[in-house]
Length: 116
Image 1 (cartoon, helix red, strand yellow):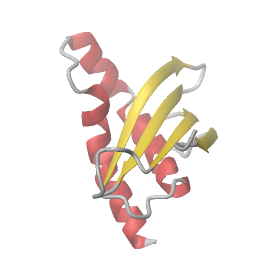
Image 2 (spheres, helix red, strand yellow; image 1 turned 135 degrees about the vertical axis):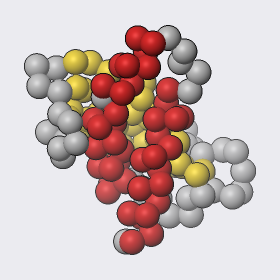
Image 3 (cartoon, one colour; image 1 turned 60 degrees about the vertical axis):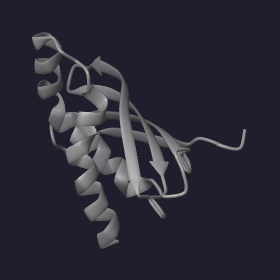
């Protein structure tokens, strides 16, 4: 269990880098900073539910952001990789409604069927 938490902490620090790499405008940069705590909260919840066994690299991509009356609804795609190659061994789709660094108010996660 400590390994999962340690891995999640490491992933939290890298999540924003993966998600927002390549964005150059000041408006986009401030938008990222505005919801950074929400992203971190959702990624922590993903770490509690996803299977990180055999993971050497985890990539979270924020693919949707909707501002809500209270907080944000984030859609995050997660890919889990091992040492065996560049193909994900597991993938997840997550919907998360969150405000600040609080636990998500709504959370759903589903694993994609990589064999399909």
